[in-house]
Length: 44
Image 1 (spheres, rainbow, N blue to C red):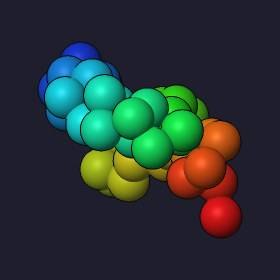
Image 2: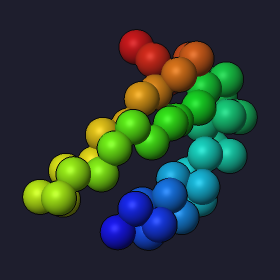
Image 3: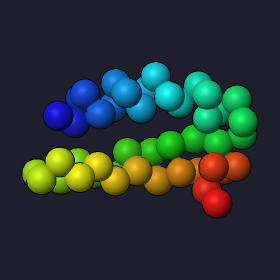
């Protein structure tokens, strides 16, 4: 599951970086909850 989430994040990341932001995968829980940290321009 974690690999699938990372693959999707890697697809979205270039769009976030173009706007001065980024995304970091924090965790993938056993119940399917995905936690990410938005950085830069996306942090608000």
